[in-house]
Structure formats: structure tokens, C-alpha cells
Length: 88
Image (cartoon, rainbow, N blue to C red; front, top):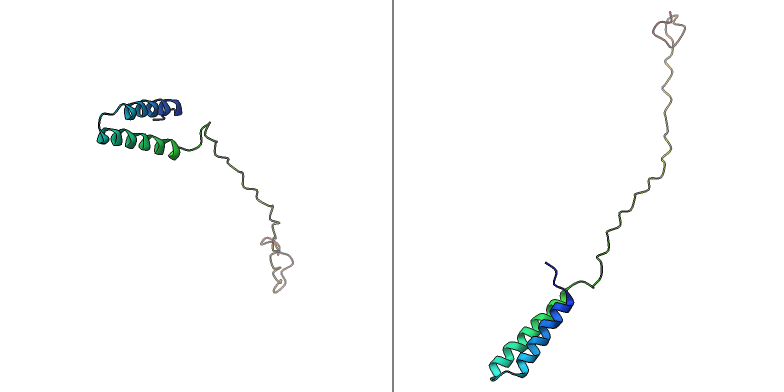
């Protein structure tokens, strides 16, 4: 749940007015502690504005030259006259 900065500042102003009008030191400390907590909320929030969308970068693949190895030529044995199984 996002609370706007303006709402937090308005709550801080209310607490400041309450601290000024406090009848005891403990009541004033309580209001000041509340102000401190509200300040921490403001400071802990990421910077105001629209959240940046994560950039998805495409991974560039460099073309890898395919090196095809030529199969070894079979040596013809005993009167064979070609590479095919059907060559006699």
C-alpha cells in the first residue's frame, strides 16, 4: 500500500501541532517520536515518481562459423569401385 508524501506531511503537521499543545513532557516526546517515525517512512521510500521499468536487453549472439569436418574417405578394398554401398 503506497501512502502519498502529501498525506505523510499532513500527519507530521498534525503531530507537530499536538507536540506544541502537549500538556506534559511525556506527551510531547510521544508526538516527537511519531514525527520521527513518519520522517523515516519518507526517507526509506524510493525516490518519488514512476517506477522505472526494468530494461530487458537482448543477448546478441555472434554468429559462430560452423566448421564441418569432411568424413574420411573409405579406401576401396578388393575391387570396390565407389563410396556407395550399392557400388560394386
